[in-house]
Length: 116
Length: 117
Image (tube, rainbow over all chains, first blue to last red; front, top):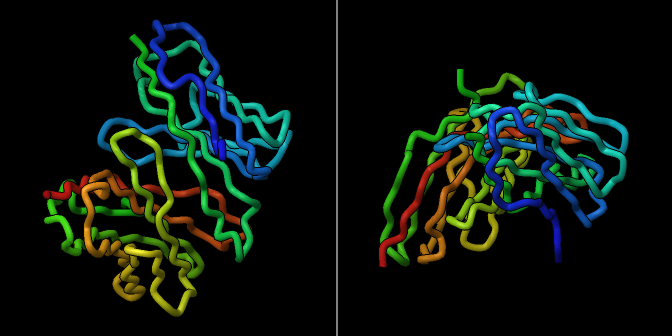
């Protein structure tokens, strides 16, 4: 039961470096999401995707990019990392929202990123 | 204005007792969904329970129940017979709009629950 898998679990970046956070799900979910969680706060949506080839911005998309070439994978790219991007990043997925599915989102274990 | 408000930053409960975690929400959309997630110290987000705005009865999932008071816009989580493993952060979240056209979850700031032996 892998569910949603995120790699890496931890990463330290220098200011200006770039990296890609990986997210894969094996539940055949159409919908995938990236959130960030700042200390002592709830989660905020960065980007989401409703299917392969389709992505859209969430609440806090600046400084990030995403792509969705397959149903399973939804990587998040950080370009020119800044200290403000120090956070815990969560990937989530859900079935296509229907009255039955309730659009329950299932989360990965998170990636803890520090930008110094 | 905050859409989801959790006014209890931290709470204690004695093992085996019941505890209520508060959540109030703000929306003008008649169709919405309310979720509770648990985040243990290991960091993952675990789905606990869901309540739809049109659901006639309060949701229950094992030891978890949701005290849904629509007129007051509150969706409090009740944990019965607390266990040490219930110690965690608990987040209330809302999906605005109908299930089939709304994707975003809006999260509250969370409540940290500590269960005392």
